[in-house]
Image 1 (cartoon, one colour):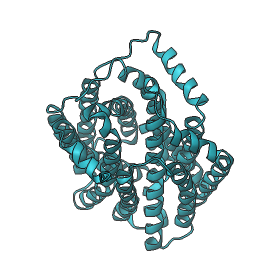
Image 2 (spheres, helix red, strand yellow):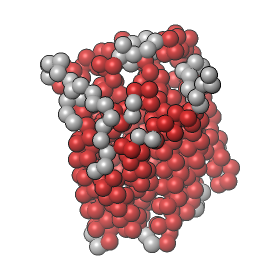
Image 3 (cartoon, helix red, strand yellow):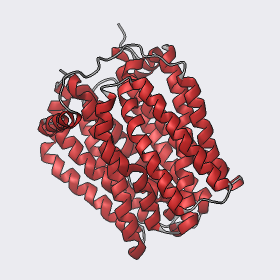
Image 4 (cartoon, rainbow, N blue to C red):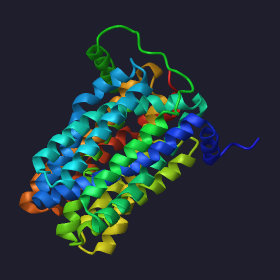
Length: 415
């Protein structure tokens, strides 16, 4: 009997109407989110022309994730996840409408943008926790792997399409319509969510104890695990040092390459294209065998690509370097998620994935803040190069541990 390909698995899960509706709505929303992200970065640069403020705004968007993600993950294990997801999508819509109105009326200031960005970070913490817990319940158990791969592909396709849409809107109409577009995308997703139902309902956590005690149990499990702990430590360093480049691109577009908003769209879309190709590759992969080595090797690729990016001021040389870095970051990040989801004990899944999200979202915010502040004195290129070297150092730390980590990931199954 012929073994089904990754694409066969994707076709099967899309036959489920709830997951199909969720995927369609999520696609619109993700494009809107990337339009917002590019617009927020460009608006920050217009208001301040400061690398430090780029870092502050990016940090504000995500630092509440660092504070609230573990708490949000515990909550997602105790309530109806679909309800929680809808609630915070609605609250995110309110933010999108507010910022659009402020920009259209000319009342926006960097302080108001900062406050609204912090508010959005709160929403992100809860709807991300709800999403990670919700998506596996929208498909049969055997379709979880395909769902993760497809979600990655769609997310990164949006990274490619969203910045391109943002560039067109900003260049032709300004940043106000870009924020309005994001509000429309939230509205579409909320309407579609009315047609989504869970296929199988996970049991709500009734083990007892307080939330903080449950969170501590999840941390202890993660640290003690022979594979998850080391991989997440490597992910902390690589995310802090390398993934911050996304939020620094407005500064590179203007100061290094002198390309303005159109250049920013090109740079961000280059990363998105690389990431989309990586998501497609991961969506087809069926086996865990060899995946650990592939994931770890991407840290070296990320470092090399970023060094190449900052070593040139030739725009069309920087583009492929950035595309390669986007490809490697997604293989590293989403590949890590696949390994963890395939290995973690079921009772710890929500808390461990909450910690994974915290690292993947929070570490780049700290990296962007530090690199942005340092760039005020020495420019953007040197701090990014130093960050790339830090990635190489983290990979060297992992080398003697790689065989044991690979055995633990590729030999275990969730209990």
